[in-house]
Image (cartoon, rainbow, N blue to C red; front, side):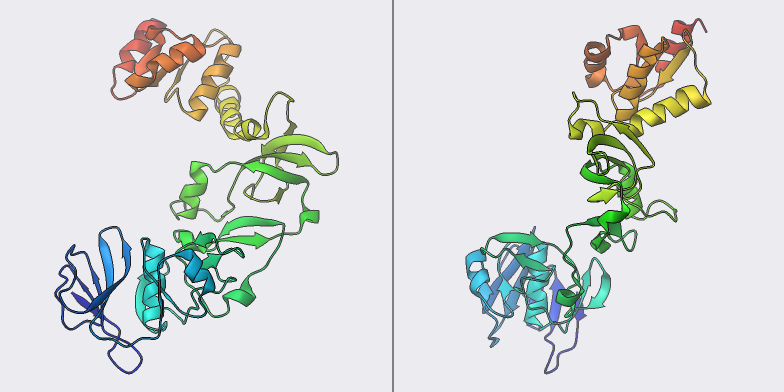
Length: 339
């Protein structure tokens, strides 16, 4: 077990242990399903982990277990309920913010946190007392003054790899051409936010649909920082009337990928063959649809449960669909193309 903090007039002894019978702790974090035998109060739980206040500890910090009471409480309180955020808030309040703890920010000192300050990011209660946003973030004393209220903003990641650093940053709508109605979240955005891509460009969002402000026409396309209220397109196209904004926003990346790969780079022509792996994915389905329009001979792969989908959706035959979980598709292609 580890002891965090110092036992002095300001900081209590916090013990992490897989056993609930610990006598040296004022605050106990344990995975033991049994409660401590002595005097204790369960102040938070998340999964199988529990936080107890142990012993006859005098405290003026109230224990709150519902949002109605929380909305009426002033200053610090201990959240008694499920959720890691509640546990973090409880630990902050129990130690008056002076303990050292592990958070998504990494090891750091939590400063004093007034748990129900309605302007703070850590615990946000709507004006009517209902539960608003409850997230794990480092809560600073100046968080009220650092927050900017704006109707125009874009999502940014300040420190890739730290999802708690995702923030909405105010932008000037006059600098952008399009009012965004729908933006998509692609796997690239997730990888970029998690720091898995070694890139200088940290913009989030690529596909959008919305309205061109100057012409008042519906458009969809590609833009950096598309996860935004407004954006400036790199490419944009009029949105057909039969498409919703949600549908239009899913088109650009997959179809641009297909046209670039198959026709600009590979220069495929009608009558030639193409092997499309992962035929039921976004790029895969776009590639099949475009290849059929261009008169290409199509071979594709997928997992066994998805074969019927490809046959029904695109009219493909069994001899065109290989197994994506093995190398058997090689023989299928060789036979279908005459070697």
